[in-house]
Length: 113
Image 1 (cartoon, helix red, strand yellow):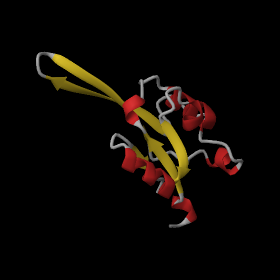
Image 2 (cartoon, rainbow, N blue to C red):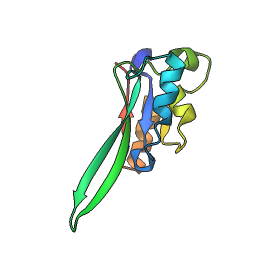
Image 3 (cartoon, rainbow, N blue to C red):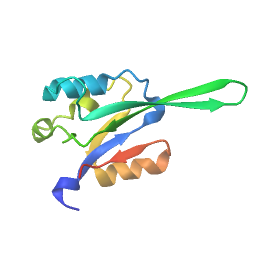
Image 4 (cartoon, helix red, strand yellow):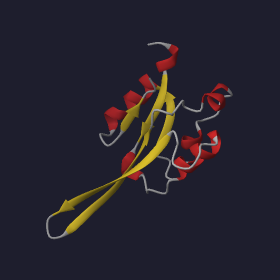
């Protein structure tokens, strides 16, 4: 695995509350104009029997995400992981993050290209 693909984000979307703090932190960190950013919080609505609904959120990096390379070179977490109020975004080595996925299926592992 090349150095470029050594690190990634593990997103435990079961606990995401949809607060958009990760999205705001990213936009502020990189001074993105409105509507652009390295992470987006996607809202998913599932229709259940008896007119009930299940709402969940999935924070997911976009093509603009560079894992906050300026921050991570200094030993800091990416802005999204640092400011996630639910603590559902973890930054780390891909192989270590993949190990955590075995424990819990409702997670997404994201590795930049």
